[in-house]
Length: 407
Picture 1 (cartoon, rainbow, N blue to C red):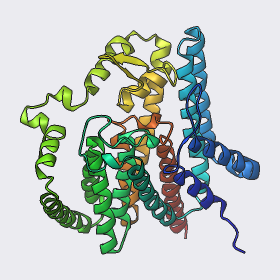
Picture 2 (picture 1 turned 90 degrees about the vertical axis):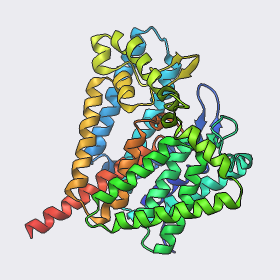
Picture 3 (picture 1 turned 60 degrees about the horizontal axis):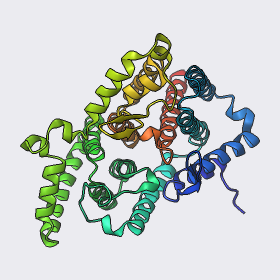
């Protein structure tokens, strides 16, 4: 009888928790089944492999980072006499589950091939679509940008997060699958689902990622394939729109949603969904009034809860401002250094083997500029999952390089 691989089990349960996620408990904040899965996996690992897991330097550093952020959050709660305690607790759990996923993934992805991860994620993408289609059949082909009439996918933390998860499928399909027929089939179908979401950030992020990775590639094949597939998608899309008599609806929606700012029908402020207003409000009315301690160490993990233009916001929709306000300028600088370190490692080990992984790296970090998905309890930890993968796989390449140089 074949034994169950614990690393594969960890990766499988983590990724499959995305399409099968549901609210397990309600109360102070919704507790999702994915969160319970993460906590259960962590307890299983430390119960079985405590010494092996906590002997890793990166894991110890991650624990130190979380402990530091938690400490400064507690200090802010004490000085604020308990104000905002509920939000601080909720977001402390969100941060905590992300750090737990990093620990689990750092162990598991060191022993699991990327083939397994990518194939499983494509299955997850299909399951995500099936669940969305079953729960919202009336919204699939609506091409609507109005809440309640568009794809919502609340089980994934709303439409933009769902689009991000599908965008990863597009990137993995194009840069990982070797068979040309399957590559085109999976790429086009995933891209079609992404377009249905009408998420500007995810669609723009996917397009930018395609061309950045094509330039990153060591030969010109990726760019040529990209141009060929783009032409094929355009042709098929035009034929399909005319066949289903949706051309007028789509042209109008795309013009309003994506091109309105160029035609003058929408201002930059409207096009950005008010993100500029949110950023300026947080900076002018909150950030510049921070004490020296708050400027350096932040206001706490759950400190953004502001009403702007009558709407409640828990994020500025920009990772730099979020980290600066929540966790302080020192943590922001540390995070930026970490990002540059990973980017340097990708460039150092530039090869065709890295294309899918590098594409995910670019896409996730582009999305951080417009989508606060890190703070979605349902799937924000997907970033930690892949960050652990980046570190493990790039360090593995570094070790192979050192071994070959010694020999």
